[in-house]
Length: 149
Image (cartoon, rainbow, N blue to C red; front, side, top):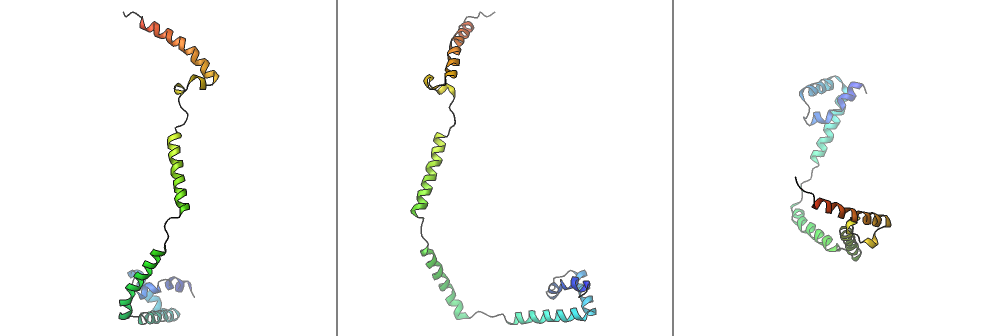
């Protein structure tokens, strides 16, 4: 098969269904007129599509009337066969919820030093606190009695 045949062959179905743009349609028609091999191939495609169209079956009316109740009964049976959540699933969900709530409640991170009691503070922090207290008192005393003016 020549290169021209390959490039045109990609458009055979679109040609048969009338979906090509004008330029491509003209190229395909011109090639089919010149190439016997492609002309035979397009006739085979056309015959195959005609057979498919002819073999389309019309639904039986009796079957059509019975179809809906059959489908509904199958759906209802499958829905009733479904189980609800198992105890394992429920327990796992409860554990996850408790872990989440515990993280929210207890997961605040380290508390500020001011809220800790002196006994629970590391020795360095206690020493700094002891040094700060007299200094703060002295600064407070001096700022209270500074005359304006």
